[in-house]
Length: 83
Image (cartoon, rainbow, N blue to C red; front, side, top):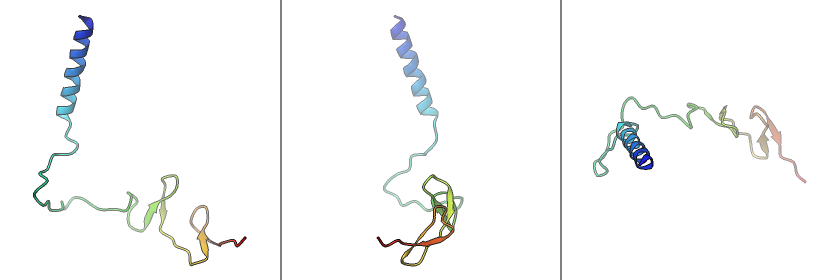
C-alpha cells in the first residue's frame, strides 16, 4: 500500500511539474514564423567580434596570416614550425 501511494504521489508531482513549465511554447510547424524583435542574435553568446575559446571563455576574433598561428591566449601570432 505504501508503494502504491508513493508511486501515485510521484506520478502526480511529475505531471504537475510538466504541465506548469512554459520554457518553450508550442508553435505550429506548417506556418512561417516572423522573427521576434526582442531577440538579439550573437555569436556563441559572446557578441559580435568575439568567439568561445577552448575552455568556454570569450575571446576576440583574431586571425593570423598564412604560415602563422595564434598563441595560447590568441593575442600574438607565432610562426609555424617546420620539422
